[in-house]
Length: 256
Ligand SMILES: Nc1nc2c(ncn2[C@@H]2O[C@H](COP(=O)(O)OP(=O)(O)OP(=O)(O)O)[C@@H](O)[C@H]2O)c(=O)[nH]1
Ligand SMILES: [Mg+2]
Image (tube, rainbow, N blue to C red):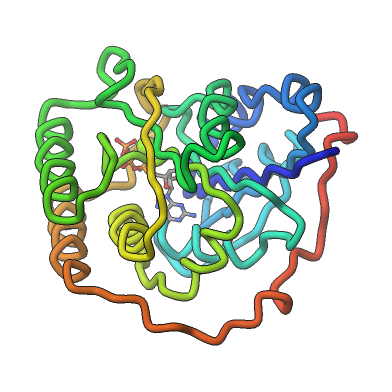
């Protein structure tokens, strides 16, 4: 029986990377393994060729005008089709390798975990991919999250995630981040919701194009999110998920 995999790629001016990211996804291999794949690029006010390249490569493009990676991702979550089984997020700058996606979803398939986070620190860092200051910040945040949330992750600032669909259904209504604190918000809230998280080693490459991060500002916003959620508890929300369904379906029969 076919399983469905949705790949979400938030992008703001990533014309140098987006084509490579989509090309890198092992579509034939996934198809052989019985997956239908849909690729959704959430394009945010790009002024370059991001949208055109993404469409040309066979992705469905959503244009989100509200700035920020968090806004883009939360919009992407609203467009998930009801029948998808697994969701993967990765960046459009070709730092994370779509070719490693099968490793990302295996722990979900085998029921080892509900959520998988690709670990750069526990994986392979290519030359000039993660600068010392980012590595130090990452160690610090990861230490804090492991100790104060008891979260089983070795890279809290990773941009490569995989989820079972039910996790997103429950998590999505609680998410509020506009920008780069979205990963910290998701990890801390998933822990509080009781989901099993695991890390798998991944490759991290030097980015294509310009960074969108403002190191100090975004670092402080992420730290604030860490503190904010320490005593966070889920209040049960009444959400009718059946209303949210994607107006499209991209099957693996398409020639990418
Ligand atoms: N849709 C959307 N995507 C964004 C926005 N800001 C950043 N992104 C995307 O989010 C992803 C992560 O942003 P990056 O600039 O790569 O941040 P990073 O990976 O933490 O750091 P570097 O790779 O070192 O720059 C990339 O695919 C960006 O294009 C935004 O405002 N809207
Ligand atoms: Mg990046």
